[in-house]
Length: 195
Image (cartoon, rainbow, N blue to C red; front, side, top):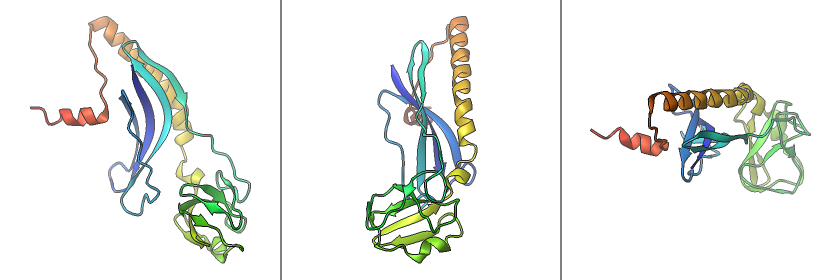
């Protein structure tokens, strides 16, 4: 039995396919890339959508793991708590700021402690990627709902797609005696070098 997952892979340095929805199966799944500097240093970012198990009988236990997006208590950009003063934040923490535009969610990209009073930078946010130095912490503006537009509906149809794939595999295995070997992406890439 193998562990499996479906995830979104964002690689903005790949001009042909910057966003992909991928599936992976392995005895032990490797960690996903989660570089907070995506779109800054040609890094990539992976977001897990669903997990499942794979056996000779097929796919089983498909479970959605992507959290439901909801409006934040501050601006309403798509999640997170309202930013509080003189508070420590870790990289990846998502917050909203009262003085910022309503679409903006702020992701901490440099750990630190917020200032005692709100800096004016939040009211000057005009686009995704704008940054605010707040005390010793740095927050980057994101439009979570806008950036992930379509992901929720894709995730909803994902279960149907996996079920259809499972049925086709089962049909092929029972009618042709086909032997299948599920391999990880790394193993698949290694097969390219076989002659």
